[in-house]
Image (tube, rainbow, N blue to C red; front, side):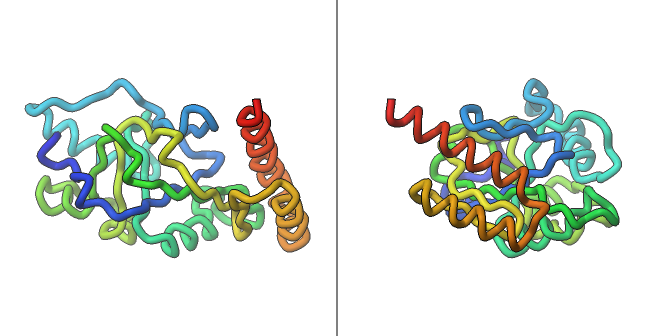
Length: 201
């Protein structure tokens, strides 16, 4: 699949990941982002399998394990999609998603593919529901290393890399604005506190 993989100079400086509870992609402070399937790979003679895997990944009702992680090239598009919370259906009042900025210069050997190129060059068919993402979406194979994940935003509230006191003030402000953000925001603050404590050691 190397001929379809983006080179470092073809990628934007940052890509954006919307992480939500129902996502197959798992996230951890130490391990970064990891796809549900981290063992499937595609050889030079497996273009049909690769094409089908990409199409499955963008098919909302697909229940198999995907080897890909979806990314947005446009932050506003990512935020708008996150706020719409399509995974919740009509129950979208709880903002429990987070937005992760990915520094593409720190991706290392991670394989990244641009969806529009796969559509044009490989004949990938994007389902109707996902066509809004066709020209600004990227997918990466298997995982994104923790060191490439920078700023994290939760719902409409940002928690930046700031002193804990400032983060606490932001946390209180966000809770008053959006009560449903309490649990996920506390989770972010807890991870940041653990990271600070480990750094001091």
